[in-house]
Amino acid sequence: MKKIYALLFTLALSTLVVQAATKTTKHKIKSGETLYTIAHANHTTIAEVQKANGLKKGETLKVGRVLTVPQNTYFPNKKTTKKKATPKIVKHSIKSGETLFTIARKHHTTIEEVRTKNGLKKGEVLKLGRILKVPQNTYFPDKKVANKTEKKKVRTLFAKHKIKNGETLFSIARKHHSTVKEVQKANSLKKGETLKIGRVLKVPTNTYSVPKTKLAKKTTSKKKKVKVAKHTKKSNKKLVASLSKLETITLEKEKITTKKKSSSFSLSDIFVSTKNTKSAKITSVAKKKLGRRYVWGATGTKNTFDCSGFTKYVYKKNGINIPRTSINQSKYGKYVSRKDLKKGDLIFFDTSKQRKGYVNHVGIYLGNGKFIHASSAKKKVVITSLNKNFYSKRYKGARRPS
Image 1 (cartoon, rainbow, N blue to C red):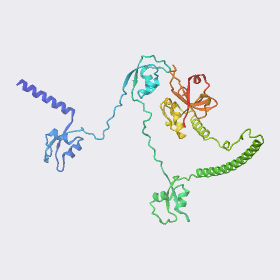
Image 2 (cartoon, helix red, strand yellow):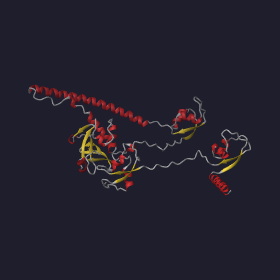
Image 3 (cartoon, rainbow, N blue to C red):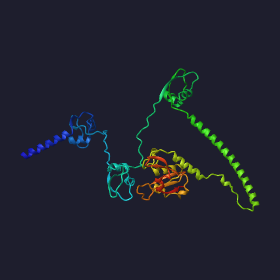
């Protein structure tokens, strides 16, 4: 008997615990009610009501029957907060030739994150064999970030306009910098509806503006181009005529001196090389980005660059697609010796502290011993002298992409 009482006591306790966990209420079935309406009214599910009352699927409900109904067990609109995934951290033993940049890039993270995880100071020397904690997959420069900032709708202001004699929808709309359609819409006017003098209209203001200045600029620039074209044609004709005279003079001299030397002028001297104009365009695009911020892995997004991202951006704007990294760019195009450098050439350096002999930095030659590059030291796009001791000693070669 004692055992039976003990068993009954434990069962009673367990039911009390369940009831404490889930609040229930007694509900008397009324005419027209269903399990769905009862469950919905008490913020629960049909399955829970069936389970609490031992109801079978499809069982008919009798009016007046009292049911035990769980309360507040189902909230479909309740938002569940997602936990932020903690980045995976791996241990990395430093090998010969490795830098924080190469380690970070290998594990798809940033130099800053590696520094903070290991308490490293800026410019601290890395010892071979030291084990670093490196976060993984925390940086993806090519991943597109969704723009969360939605464009706010511009509020349209309305003005009240009393129709006067001789006015039309067009003249009213024009006066308030709006359109005929917008005026019709604001006043529910039908197409061709007659306007009565004295009627007050709601007119949208400043919803339409004609770009007069832009059109004027375009027309003037076209005229200038035509004038320039005519001028160049005339000047070219004069040059050809003068050169042809010079050629005849030299030919006569050659006959007298029994063809000692050939003419020193030719028609090809008139025309300027297309390569020079292309190099000028490359340097022009590059100079427009002076002072823009250096960000590792950036290729022009938000006007930020790293060294190879900057050169790739400039060349792409000029219709030349070059590789992404500085080491791959150093293998692309025609090799150029230092003495034969021209504007727009890519120049490469080994800026590593130990000077390991591999290319890790790139810039664009501007002429007169200067080059433009996205500097990690200056944290921006700058112009530097190639004769500067640091870069002159670390110079690794040049290429001319075609």
